[in-house]
Length: 292
Image 1 (cartoon, rainbow, N blue to C red):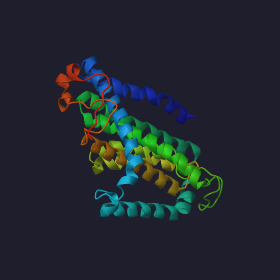
Image 2: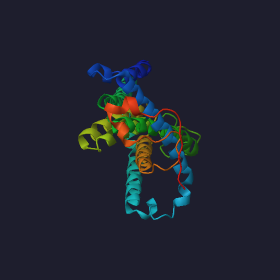
Image 3: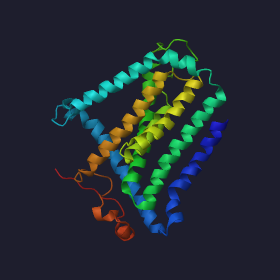
Image 4: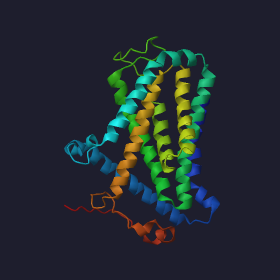
């Protein structure tokens, strides 16, 4: 199967894009690149811990003045997402009738284009971060990967909770709680999680956001063409993947403003972000600090 062949080669493509551009384009030392990758590992470990803490303790701060429930924008975004999903649900029969005759090969091609392009874009963003010493590029790419992974795990629970039947199992799009696996799409969710990270690095400018999210959406059209999902499954997956990555991006930036919180690895001094000194000043080992 063509999609299987593409996916088998994607890890090697990502490996090349991530590890080698810095050495091909300029005379960056192996020590510098290794230090940056080590720093990124610490970034992932620290933020994973802090993310878990934030989620677990979030109910304790629901009445805080900084709580989203006191922010009108929260309700605007929530209402917009609900309206978008409701509109997609109403379009389920129309989209299904128009796309189910796409043909298996064409549907697989759309999915392969989506997988390859969105994954390679995320890997290229990380590779650019290595090449240019841009911490934000690397961190946004890593957070996008985290968002895609977390959203995929959440998707498993959502599928089990809603049990919607696939179009190939029922001609009706109202068949929830029937033990199905249609809502939301587990294939589309990580594509939008990755796309959100790439778009965010470019401040969600239309010239970047429109192409990268369109490429992610191609996977959804392919899944509908293969009669695996309803349109509202795809839109639900887009909201889940994008929302998860955006939440993690926001949390990770908040973490940078809270250096006193407990971490697995000691926080680096701001001066360590300069490439000219990174190889000699990046701290190694484990440390922890906490202020009451």
